[in-house]
Length: 403
Image (cartoon, one colour):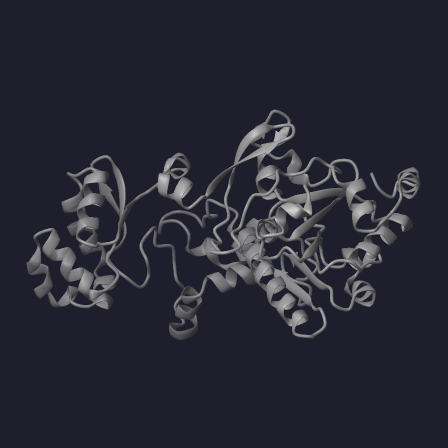
């Protein structure tokens, strides 16, 4: 991957040293890389990022890894060796951002904690992602996505009233942590541009989930009521739910009183508008069981497409429930919005990855290059960024500082 390929990206002047692995950190640097930042992924000797060994596979190559790590350069660096540590600090002096998702204290044990990095480069933006953050009572506890979901509260409200607490279908704590880190990094880079020093961006998976709980936690703060699992029903609006159709399920979202009137007339139940118990949204939320039956009396004998087409023709929000196959094959999502992209990997060949959700008119997010092979760019990074000679690199390899 050549830097000139990314010169049009909004972040093309930014260099990121990425020590992260698996999901939360790589998701963050994927977003930054898609926007043009130079991402130097620093991997451990031997196996590299754990997710290189996660399914699904194309041949021997992990599609999990290849999706999250496009637009990155891979170098293998032994941070436990004095020479490897020196190489890292030399890179820090020439970087804008360092991102890691080790357990708190790991960087300090390696002798490359934030204080050391800051003395090496006062402008460095240092971001760390962990289960519980770098401060507080729980900072030393291990944390994975499912821990973030459990202690952030989202599992307690996901599922049905008679089901156990349920993890969301995707690793949402990791994704939210990656998004929080990305926002913190970009904010800190703006501050550096304005003449302020670099700073530490401390991101917790649990904090990120708590933030996303928004009004659910407000219910407890205001009413001292503990929200429970409600299935697909929304706590604050009704009808806003999944409804049974003849051949599947459909989403109908009647978000205000005006839409309620349009909805009732559309299904030829105008008399519902005269019912005091359904008059306002708050009333309909309380009567959600009755209203669900009314809606399903209408939807039960109609197929999903018929229902969706009908309500959309009335400007009532309505949608089918897509599978992964439906998403990938939808022309609007996959093609018009470019959420499915094709890239040529040196080993896996042509493959598809998920596009960026960030659409910029003049500096669009792009998939510039496939995910790197382990250590693919070690020599190039050492030569181009640190200006090392072949002899110096050979010596570092002999010392097992780089691979």
